[in-house]
Length: 523
Image 1 (cartoon, one colour):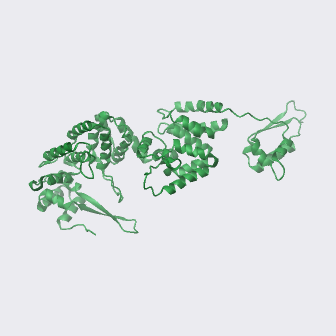
Image 2: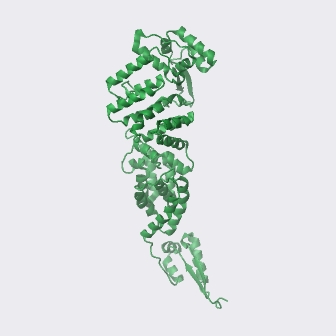
Image 3: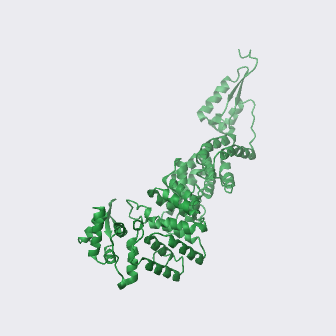
C-alpha cells in the first residue's frame, strides 16, 4: 500500500531535544525500526548536542548512533543578532504605542537591552516568548511603572526563572537604602546577594548588570557603590522598580497602600503651582490619607517649583490640624502630623539657596498662617531653637520674628481655636518670654479650652522585659497648664466649662484626675 502512494508521507518530529533522555532514546528507536518503510520520510528537528548526549550510553557514542539513523543532516545557520534585535523592536513597538502615558526611559533602554535582555535571547522562539509575556505586563503596568524595568524583569522571569525567584526572595536587600556607617546587618545582606550570584551560575554577570541598572541600591554589595535616600526618592518619583512599592506592585500586580497614597502625592505635586487648586485638592483627601499623601511630597524635594513655595507651604502648614494622630503607635514611632508637614516645608525652603530670598519667603508665608500653633511651628523650623531650628534665616531676623510673634499673641485668644494643635506650647512661649510680667489668659471658650488641654496631653509607653504588650498612660503637662491659666482654681473653672460642653470625655476625666491630686508614677 505504501509503495502504491503517488507522493511520500513526511513525518515531522520537532523539539526532540526538549524530551527527557529516555524519551529521546525511545523516539530514535521508533524511527530506526520504522524508517525503512517505502515512501515514508522522517524529518527530525533537534539540538544536535543535546540529543547526542542523550543517546550516549556506556561506551557507545551518541554521535555514532545518530549517524547510523540519520541519512542526511542539515545544520541551520545561526540567526544574526541584528535580525533578533529587529524582531524584538518590531514586535515591542506596537505594545508600547498602545499604552497611554507609557513610561519609557530611552537613556536606560540601551544598557538594559544589550547587557541583560539580549544575552538571554537565543532564537526567534525566545523573541516570541518575551513579547507574549511582556504584552500583558506592559499593557497593565506600563503607565504606572517604568517600562524599561518591566521589560528587563520580564526577560529574567521568562528565561531565568531561578534568578527571578531570587529577586522575589531578596527584594528588600535589592531596594533598601542602607547607612554607610553602622550597618550591623551588612554581612547578612552581602550573603543574600552572594546567594543570588551563586544561583545564577554562568549568568552571574546578568545579576550584576541587573543590580547595576535596575536595583542600584544593592551595588554596595557588588562594586562598593553607595546610593542614599535621595536616590530612593528619585526612584519613587520616576516609578522605578528600585523602589520597594513599585517592585511589590509588579510582583503582586496589585498596588500596595504606599503606592496608592503616592499617586495622590503625585497629583498634589502637579497642582502645586496653583495655590487654589492645590488647597482644594488637599482638602478633598480623606483625613486618614493626608499623612501619607503629604509625606509622599518629600520625593519631589529637588523639583519643587520655587515660585510655588510660599503659597504651597502655607497650604500645608494650615492643614496640620486636619491630620489625625495615628492610633496604636509603636514605642519608637515619633512621626507627628506637625513633623510630617514640617519635613516637606523644610525641604521646600531649602530649595531657595539665597538667604535673603528665603527670608523674604518666610515673611510671605507667616501672614497666611491662620493658627498661632502653625506660626510658632514655622518660627521654630527656620530659627535657632535648640533641637528644632534649622537656621534658615539670619539670627537677627529670627529674633525679630519671635518678638513679633510674642507681641501678636500676648493676651490674645486664637481666632481659630478649633485649628490649634499646639496651643499650650504657644502660651508657654509667652510665659517664658514675659517672666514675672506674664498676665494669665482667661480661658472661657470651650473650643479653646479643648485645644489647650489636648495640646498638653501626651502618652507614655512602657514595655515589660519579655512581654510583647505595650502599656500606655496618658499624662498632662500639668505645671505648665496651671501657670498659663494663672492657678489651679482658674484651670479647674476651665475644665468645668469643658465638661458642660463635652460631657465625660477622656480628656475631661484626665484633667479632673489631676485636679483630684493624681500624678503619674515616676518609676
